Image 1 (cartoon, rainbow, N blue to C red):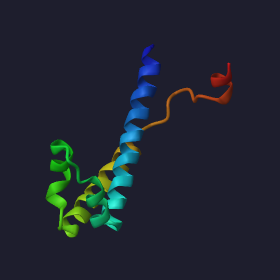
Image 2: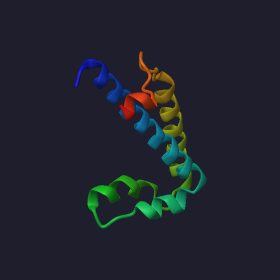
Image 3: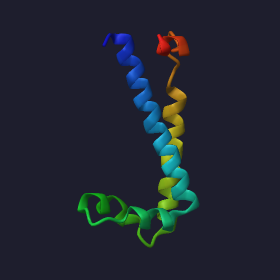
Image 4: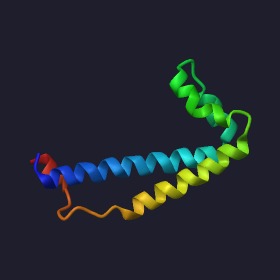
Length: 92
């Protein structure tokens, strides 16, 4: 993998992180109780992430706003690669 491929892979990874933050943030804003209850888990690590929001929809909404803003900020900083990938590049 050359440096151009690595840069594209890093951009795609950052884009996926931004999409996750935006989507999770919106769900946390619009449906905080349902969203937190869905992520409650027997796995301590997972449950520890959502426990602070249990029974506190306002707190989850606030965190959702933070996620949404951070995701949009990350996405807005991403730049297109120097050479776009086309269907011909994929098909050979």
